[in-house]
Image (cartoon, rainbow over all chains, first blue to last red):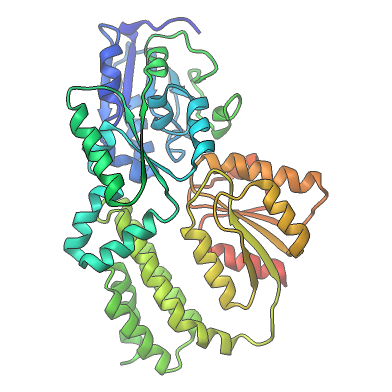
Amino acid sequence: MDRVNPERSKLIACAAVIEEMLPFMPPHMSYEVLDFGLHIDPKSLKRALQNAINSSAPDIETILLGYGLCSQAVVGLRSGNRTLIIPRVDDCIAIFLGSAAEYQKQYHIVPGTYYLTRGWIESGDTPFSEYDILVKHYGEKTAQRIINKILKNYTRLVFINTGNNKLKFYQEHARSMAERFNLHYEEIQGSDTMIKKMLCGPWNDEFVIISPGKTVSFFDFRKNGP
Amino acid sequence: MSRMKTQPQLVSAIANLNEGLALNLIRERLAENDDPLTLIADCQKGLQRVGERYAQHKYYLSGLIMGGEIFYEVMELIQPAMENRISGTGSGKVLLGTVASDIHDLGKNMAKLLLSCYKVTVYDLGVDVPPEEFLRQARKLQPDILGLSGLITKSYDSMRETVRLFREEGYQIPIVIGGSQLSEEVFHYTGADYWVNEADVGVKLCLRLLK
């Protein structure tokens, strides 16, 4: 498919990825950020995405979704009279790592990996951030019991470095969480490859392209995917 | 206290993640010879509310886990009553595991616990189980049902691969896939025979298949 026409395109992205996407946004492209917390409930996320698609300005022809399958929240979305472009990935970790193939590689190395990024740390919605709340609610012993259960089969914590002005803070946060919960800490350099391809095109088979009048299916993500 | 009173209390105690109260109510109702299956059903109603509160952002992930923890404790109390109630010996064999590339096992463990209550023999291979290992163990253990569990979307590819391998090798036992995010489309993608979103539904299905 051809390159993007920024004036007739709009990005709808999760709060977890927007900061990494903004630097590569072509001038005059509009965007909308959806709440990070929506990922907890795929049905709510689907509703919010459909609303954002439907309520886009009439002159928008192409909508870029800054999401992956995300617990299948994108499955069932209708394009209406626009074209939808979605990275053919399971979730945003692949977007940060630059490709679905790189994500797959990491999974093969250590399946029990917890990934942290700037966005995820900022959201405060990780088991690590929950720990202190748990202590307050249930006491130290029960908090430990719950966190052990959540992290039972995890052995590695990976911080994906996407570079930003508070980098040191995020690195330290991730490292201290790994130490505190007895996980092996690793830092992986993020990649902007997929973000650039998404925002500027042309879109190859790393992207799902949904023509006007069509609905997103799970199978769209498995044609050439992992 | 009568069951009429304790039933909503038990559902609320679990929904509110009040472990102490929930366990006390279970003890009371067991002492009154209440049907253990009714107790389990009440607990599941409570767990359903926990799930709803999680979806509404009233609980964090830890709320879900805590709900699961209470359920495990409840099951430990109920298990002897269940075993007395269900007569006979082993009524079938289920080979169970979380598929390759996935390490989540909350649903799998719940299914295992419930199946054990019905005296079904469960062989649990753990998490991140490669297709070849499922096949090796199936050859050795000769199960009646293969249960493949997975939460993340990557697990669907491993489920598909495992089903493919079993069929290629001529194994025709029913294959059930389980996971809270599964859908009809994913079910068709994997090529499995049955799919379930909840552990207790999976258990009912297995019991039906084992008849």
